[in-house]
Amino acid sequence: MTTRTRPLSPHIQVYRMPFTAILSITHRITGIALAVGTVVLAYWLASAAYGPVAYGHAQAVLGSWLGKLVLFGWTGALFYHLCNGIRHLFWDKGRGYEIAEADKSGRMVVGAAVALTLLAWIFGL
Image (tube, rainbow, N blue to C red; front, side, top):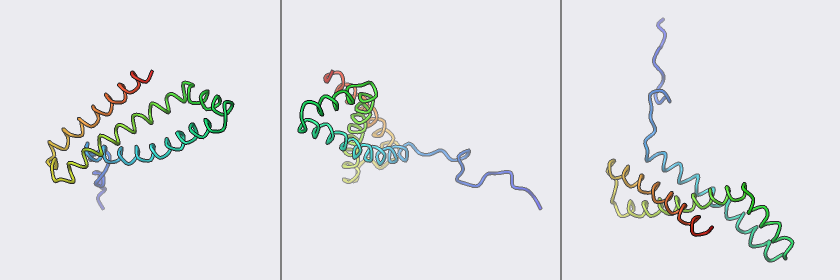
């Protein structure tokens, strides 16, 4: 009996995930991150309604370096999800399905999301 030396397909050694697949998975992950971030936003708004002590505590949590990192990630997820959603609207119209166009629009989405996130934080701080 001979031994098999080649891996079963698809295998991580022979299969490279397409860029559009990575963007699709990232779109789903950012959707979940936005849902979790909305809970954080609701916490911040509710703390304002509960009074100055609760609001001060929320500001201390969200104003810490970890809180700002979470908010930065949430902002990045928001802009990525927005830009990729616009890309999907073009796909709904039947445009951009070619591999080269899909890769180009995917790179534009990532670039726009990074730029918008940085601009929002520059103007916000």
